[in-house]
Length: 174
Image 1: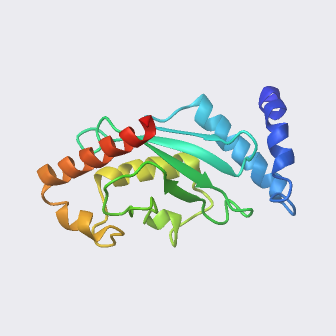
Image 2: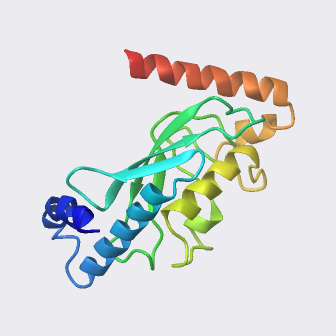
């Protein structure tokens, strides 16, 4: 734990404006969540804070097996509010994805990130839930209506999802 505290001190300094009034407990909670992710990784998900801001993380999700996203890896950002965990973090895909509950700008419609949020959730539970959503969308509440309408035709859906991912990989390589 001492080594984590030593590496976290620059982060703590740079987030001092966001950590006033109880923010140190938020930073401590985020450090604990990071340690948990590092000590017991979950299949298909990872997340790390930015070098200078403990309230901004980068994450990645691997597509679940037997879905349109199998073999694909997607990048996300996670922004934590100053009153985390009493308010949910904001997650956004930075890798484009074709999905009924994710719009073309990477915004996500997931109830646990909105009205069903609980302080009992953490980064791991949110990422695992989001990964599960990839294979089991809520088509009753789509952000991408076109993708939701196409979900039943899995052959066509998988083709579009694959093309979108390949397009994103070309952009990253350019």
